[in-house]
Length: 379
Ligand code: NAD
Image: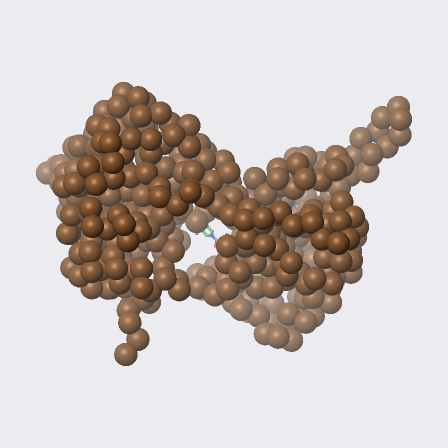
């Protein structure tokens, strides 16, 4: 059983798919592990640490991936990498399949079995493999730190000899994993925190973190959570009521952090240009949904925009990658926990149970075809 850990080709990607800790675990499973030289550099892991954990270092991607039965990455391999993969190899990564059907077909044509970690069912057994949670948690934390760094005032109330500095007012929109961590982080920094979501289950969680919940709590709100625990796309009527409620609130906030997502859909637009214009100069907005179309009208992916009225809108790409060492450590453990289930420990070899619930949910391509029903070509 040969496992390869490749470097990321997207310049924005700082994370790495394995750490010395998980290399040791793969070795204990009976695998030979090859790491592409420099793969961990941006996450603070030098090649020597991988070597010390038992990995072999290979100069390039093709050399690392040659004969590999399992290829570990953070992002989906690009066209340039596919030629170097063995037909039949298992490739595990965050595949970003929605809207990227051509790239998924290319994985099928390369003959690899591609597994999308973000499609992992959110069941108890798979919690340890949940990359969305591990990465969103760090993104929520980092979003607050980025906001605090951009904000020209203090977060906590400070009573000093020179007078009182008021506490910052922070509003979190979307209270999933990222939003909850953003609330907790802003509270730790001493801010006055409010939060909104369309799922009723969130209210108690928000209050238990010491923040105030604000939402349009009508009949649609009571039905907004899907069986999977996600939000539905809300009706135009609900969106209008929500906008009315939050617009007067946003005008009084110093910091707004938006994290709202709907699986497989563009991010809902929650903050209009008029709302941004209602905020005081020096206020900061961080849009964590910017890669999925953005929750904030004036946000630009990969940029920090300062509006005419002096509001900064932060649109960092790859927020978890801004904490590359922590996010890689958690991602690498998520990956190991999944790969371990694909191995027969007695035989020390791969033995994929193709009808296992986790395998079926995450497997996108196999034997030359797109096998996941959600991404098969429509006929
Ligand atoms: P997400 O990233 O899909 O969305 C972020 C948040 O945005 C969600 O809370 C969602 O309700 C909210 N949102 C969507 N549309 C909105 C709108 N129009 N206005 C305001 N908010 C809006 O969510 P997530 O972080 O993946 O979490 C989704 C759920 O999954 C949560 O209930 C979470 O607790 C649950 N979860 C379960 C497990 C598990 O293993 N059981 C693991 C992680 C998360």
